[in-house]
Length: 341
Image (cartoon, rainbow, N blue to C red; front, side, top):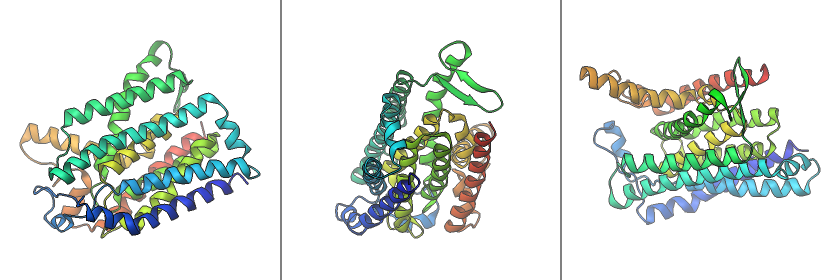
């Protein structure tokens, strides 16, 4: 019966998120929370100007409402004892809450960014220094909470369990700080084509659904199910041609919660495989900037990399499908490390 609870949770997440679009998108239009398109972007993106942003609230609400109902069902349905029993552990409960809070705080930073874009019509939003400071502060608070709630080890492929409280293991914490910052922003960079960040994160969330079930992290398994259902509900409105964008509010939330999944199962390094598409998007920007500074030429037609393919003639739906397949391959590779560790 435990397997039925995540399924019901996912269905609730889908229903809530999909239904929200009926009234939430018109509301965003009414208050003029629309996207401003930079002139340096693909010219055909100008037609998207005015499309409502902050749609991320839809799947955020869907995820949390579905998760709450899922925990309630676990408390009353036969077979939910594993979920409730795990949440009786203060450390596991604290880590789950910390991950969700981090995702919400990252979304809050994204909201400030979106607000500046929507109200002041400044597409750049927050200054990079402001965003970086806030993100690192949130990441540091999350890591401190994870340490205090019992995260003393991490698993590395071909090495095994590594102690994080002494010796070289102490290097994990500053690296983890940069890791969280980097991947949160990488998910944000992936959100540049209709349905892309939603579809890729759907695939990554499927990996964490399987991984948490395999490793016995039942609270996070329920959270993954809620997120999966909500993302599918959001795709109803976000696939090309998108009726709503998730905005930085949504992409920063997704970045935060994906990172939380990675740390919850004590295998953050596997996000380099499961999140290989995010990594490629971020690295394309880094490489483009470094190459241009050195040669005054562009290596890609435009970065992040999805814009390069878009300007090479790929349709948006093709980019979404191909990039999601790449993400799936990375997730399968990551899952093999868990199965054979």
